Image 1: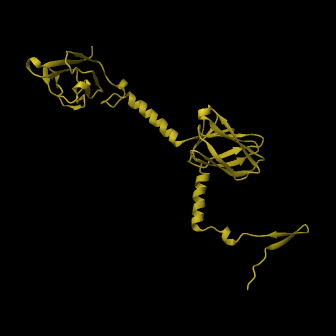
Image 2: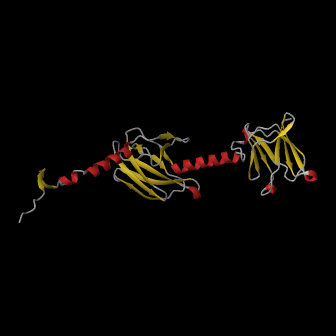
Image 3: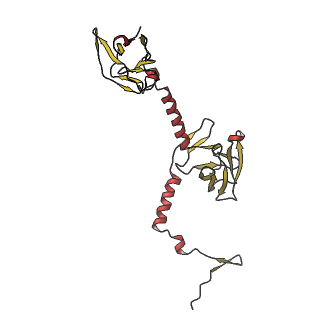
Length: 274
């Protein structure tokens, strides 16, 4: 039977030391492993977007790249997480020469967790993984003799999307129904005379079309007929009803709305400007 070879023996300062080397197979990478490390390296070492916050924080866009935070001995790096986020675990590759302490700020119902990072010496590099109630942070830590990032924070894609949604909601709220443009871009200088149960509540124009808003009581009933006054004659122009909104494919100056016949006929006159 072939006996297994014992580990190599080295003599150091009169003391025998056992030296065990890794198998060659553990040092070599397969094609998939090589590809995986390349992809991970692209994410780790990509430049990404780094900006400065209004309070001096260095801001990373979460998830875009692996943030690299530079610290310095005898200084502290403050890494601030999202308000309301609960930290579950903090794992550091080098726990001997790197110290990470927790801190908090803000009101009790929306506190933000801070990770206070301190290296023991310069020229160190390690990684840190922080798991929270919302996400997982993968952060690279470096130590420099003099330079460091005093404050570090993050922008979150979901927060950016929420801000855009809020802006869009405000824009939509300022848009007058039917016209599809903000109210300050519309002409409301129309005067209405006459009485009828369906008398328009609002009339405005975007310069191309005229929008005539009727009361909700008109819903489901026949709308009045619109005649545009041009050259002393009453002419019918193209228009369509959208619920209680009459959209006229014409920028009118004078018009008449007519409903009914004979003694039951009702008229409303519309005139633009003074």
